[in-house]
Amino acid sequence: MLYLQLLLQIVFLTAVFLHITKKNFGAVLAYSIQSLMIVLLLLNSFLETQNTSLLWIMFIVLVVKVILAPLFFIKLIRKNELIFSAATYLNTPLTLVVLAVLTAMAHSYKFAPLTGIIPVNTGLLSLAFSTMLLSLFLIINRKSALSQIIGILSLENSIVAFAIFAGLEQSFALQMGILFDISIWLIIATSFMAMVYRHFGSLDATLMKKLTD
Image (cartoon, rainbow, N blue to C red):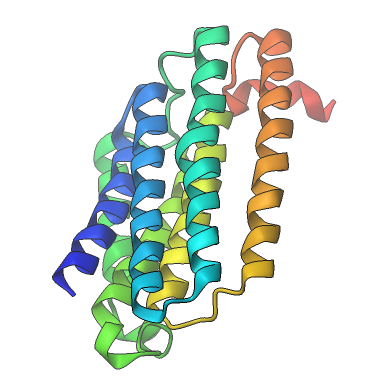
């Protein structure tokens, strides 16, 4: 249990780091580490259940999320010289305050029906749920399209972690469909961001208001 708690804490801390890092390389590295922790959680589930489909899912997650997705992002960053990420709508102190509030909310009694699905895993489920909220806030608070995409992928990671500790079935067909969607989505998103950068000279979402004209 301590081992699983450590893995989930790293997932949570990487979500926090995504909010405070000012460099895109740091954000990509944090997402890669977060995805690696998900792989280790899936490995633990396989060792407990001996479900071979989990082993295949773990391998595909390793390839797609830990290796391919970061490579896509790093290639985009280097090609367009996107070293520093765009600013946030809230400054760093206010962002940290919101993160603390969201974490407290996730551990509050209001969400007890959700985080208490399996009583023995209540603490872990609360931590996974707080990571979901933090990832969702990252999408809202960041101005950079790249950071917003990483936020969506972080949200998906936190949902997988929550499903693992909630004892929800990890069907092979469902996971394969999700990973296939992520792979295609990454290719499309990378191409889209490259075109946006060529047109606007930035991935700052606030500079794309002309798209509404």
